[in-house]
Length: 524
Image (cartoon, rainbow, N blue to C red):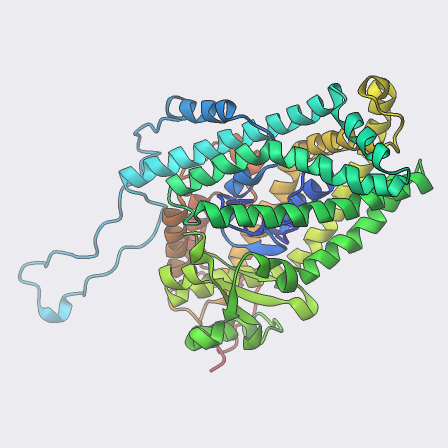
């Protein structure tokens, strides 16, 4: 995604995160503004302003801002086995791939004997044990997401209903008569309350990723990352809320438009500086050519074919293995901050050809203008949401404001009401946002297949097998429910992507590729 919440590279799987993948949890403050940044992240998919190859529905789950108690969190996990127990059937059970060995045919001349051929990766297959783990992990995250969202809404309602926001505002008023200094007290306190309420969800989500061997980050470093995310989130919330309340005072009837105008360049600037100042707070980066010069040279071939202006000194290796078992590569930033990042887990667990396909997919996001188009889509959606939120906000304050202890729309205590409305709107808009994202991800898959064709031998099989490996490592759901896919998946289900990669072959059919029309000889 372009990843703004500015979501930590921590959804999917986090998103995706998807899966507590350790992506940048920065700015995941419990504010509507940060929630809308999450839309931007999912559209272009990846956290911290990055576009990611494999993050799907699960990237969002374990990082959702909400509140919970240990008892409420534990209850859904106890229901998983009964509600989502895998059923053996020809549709759901995926056998292990056969071995490539073939028995010799008796009496066949040596000249006619064919050497053993490796099996083709025609479908997403998991062993019985791995399949059950993938089902249990995915279903646990689906349930965790639903519980976290509902509890997040519940906490905001409680804060309003019992006048907690008004009491925090009164505390700030006792400390200083200055309205803006009151905001500097109120905003961090409110965000701290919301995030402490959501901490059990984060704890359970990380324990889930540890139990299913998705994360290797111990609790000490995890808490340090969480603390850094909180500081970044509170800073972002202070900036955005101050801007919001300033324009509310200047234009009570048009603040939704002027805030939109002010917010867009701020978010774009955050995306621009994230590779330099935000990402390094969570991960260590090294020049890729220093450790893997051959891989950097091969990636340069894809860069030149994709017409990207990214020299080898902008290719970096990220030490992801200290926190996650997941694999990924991405392109992030723009202009002077544009760069390629390859996780060290990717180099360790995938072949060079598979890594090149993953990078080809990421290149597609830039060449096909998914970053620009995604930001435009986000901007239009944010404007619509702010307008609807403005109407609902004034209605809610007029109807319940007095009972909530809120003196008017410009009262600091009205902020939870705005957050509640925006959080509900974001949830309702998820099918639209994720549907748009799935189209972009599918097109990036096509581009990745086309741009490495001729550079990577048997590129379709290489791409299909890379999806297989990604699924095995990440415990991708082999059969996600249709409603879950429709509502929550920012990427097409991995099984569908694998089948498409294996069958996409316009060249053998005499057809023109969709995006990479002319294929010059790869640079040497």
